[in-house]
Length: 307
Image 1 (cartoon, rainbow, N blue to C red):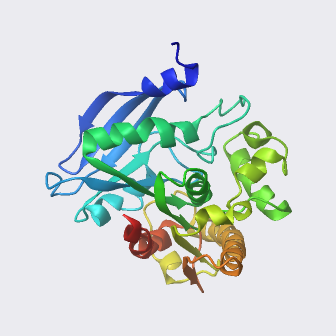
Image 2: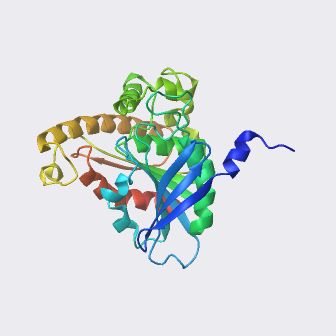
Image 3: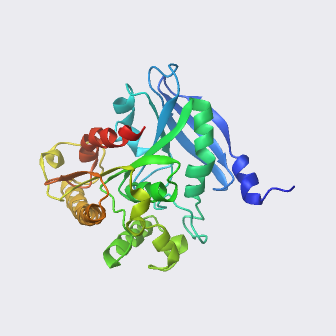
């Protein structure tokens, strides 16, 4: 019997290169038939990596994701945070502006990414086999990645036990939320019509967690965002921004205010549906790494209960 092309493609995903960068970090090059090219992935393992099987956390970058290394490593200090925790941490690179989803049409700038297939079908078996995974997984996403984390969770309930969104906007219905998606994609030079079609069409609904709340029931959920108000962490010297501090704070304030509004909207929808979630809405805080680093322990506490 001839297997369908999709099945054949999924079976042919493979790790083509492995680089051990430290005792706790291994970088992979994964040949992905779904994506049509190789994808670079970092994997963090604990110091006691030989003690037995471990669950896995997939961490998704925001819209500024680069192809060099995940921002969670360079700016989020994920390596330091997870060093003593018995879990695999998987950090894909190069998802800027894509929402880690399967695009419907080829985009002139972003191509035709198939992140959902890569993250849910191709990559997990490779990670579990190479790094002694248990098959229990959770997601942590930042900004754009926060929306993707909740979408992947409800679309693949059997694969993930929970998801965390930091300064994200999980729902994509309504003019404001649709505008957020379109603007985020446009910042990377893409056109969101090539991702899910015109706003409000079936594929937008199919990727909106707010339209699939029942699929989130019983999962371990976390939502955090700041009000956009500038606080002490915004005034401290930083080494991860090239622009003047005033410009960075102004932009971060506006972005976080939008994420705050959207995340609160989603939190209310979850509450009204009787779906439990850990909420961490801060009275101050902009769209910036000092706050996300501070939120990571509480996000981990929420999702680790399901691992």
